[in-house]
Length: 127
Image (tube, rainbow, N blue to C red; front, side):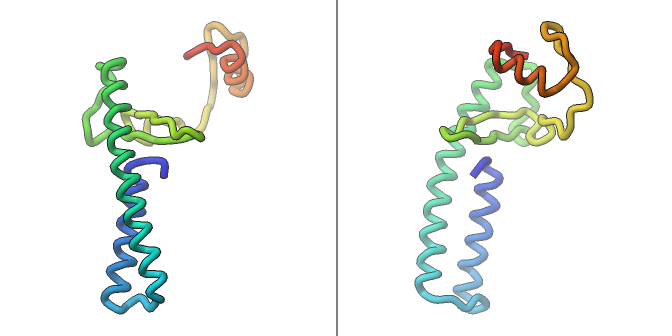
């Protein structure tokens, strides 16, 4: 799971499945029911960890960027990579560009997005 929202949506889907199984609208084996129950436990456990790490990422962001904090209900924390690094984005998905139209960097003399990204990675320049 890559965000608290994703975990919440998945949990709702599992709970709906369990409700449908319980009321008889979903015909499945007892083993399937057991798997749904187990999945719900796993997601709830993961959700607690995600919420804790999200809060830490949000607090760290607020300390470093007090002028870029837009409130509790706007930002979102995403998780990625093998170690599930938490990254808080103050405007949630709106914080990320859909497409790069033009890229310029004062220390790198190029306009190619790939070249800027590669040069920044090689030189470990932050921008």
